[in-house]
Length: 502
Image (cartoon, rainbow, N blue to C red; front, side, top):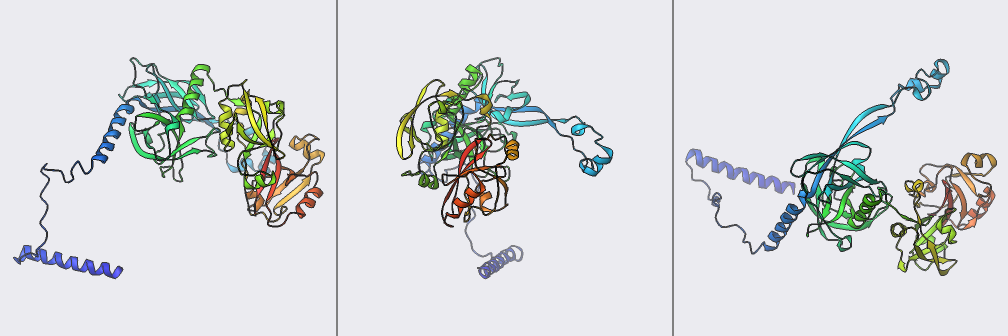
């Protein structure tokens, strides 16, 4: 190929040489194609009939942008952030402290250093009197929130309410005249392939619009929020787009731009938006109640994997496994048990743990929820009176997901100890807790990849009780090298199941 390129280049240079020779020496130039006449506003190159569909789509984009952009705002915030003072390494040296003490007193003695941080985001107006929806992370810890409208008028905003669990916030400005508002859509009408426009202020560039499609639905376990059910889109979303609307071709808001998947800080083809159904429900609670009220059962849950399905004798890998039941919770009152597999809620099949969590959260506290569970191979219905998610649990409800590794020997990479009085005291464990404690996990080992950590208590192996190191070894020796293993562990006071496959 390289030789062909060189030959082609040589012929081209030869032709150009002859042309220039004709210009300056009088030799007739080599014949060639006639040069195109300059544009004169004549007939279009392509007929409108041939591109009618494209022109129609273009006009729809223009119409949607004109209709929605007046209600899209730019949000800038100012926050006062405290950081720990930076001390020279010598002040942390034990030798230095032994002879000179701590010249700055306990904790360094220096006051935390404060500095001002500024950030940009987006939002959209939902009421003519100036109520605006945006992301919680856009206004979090802000001491000053400034809203710039599409007409370039600027207002100071007040934060009405925030919900960190979904990253949604409501702010308000006192506008002097009625403002343009968005039109709510319905997330149920969004499907993979739906054309959407993302609007906002990427990198502070106001009134920006990008186009794409919905590339996936119900994205969860992204580690972004505690309640996740994202719309995934390839419409370009960049820093500053957060809080802006995601709209369909009818000009209806179907989501709120929230996050991006990126390795370099910029757009890489994957963005996430909160479905408008969730946004509207949270906004309504924040405005009417000042907080979001969520239903709560008081259970720790995880997805049913092939390993779990096999160990619990399930016919298919569906439903949600109850890994723990909190004392004093609605689930405990209803006698739900660890090891139950929830397959339906109020007659609707449960797809996964996130699906159950989202549906329970929308049930008003005090209502009765009927759970269909599989216990010891038998299906039964259990009625639970739904409680309200306690505030102290609201920001600590994420559970560690199970991992998987190339598990060949259950002891490989683990160092374990019996639970004695001293260890129980250190870990805050009652005498009723049985098992062995993990003293160390070998870095890079399969057990580390499976999610096991120092301080975890191993309670069961393949649902067989472990009360001591000798129990652990006895049970482990009976497991074939290539067998799948299911461990029950206690971590931070909660039980969970960790499966490990060869």
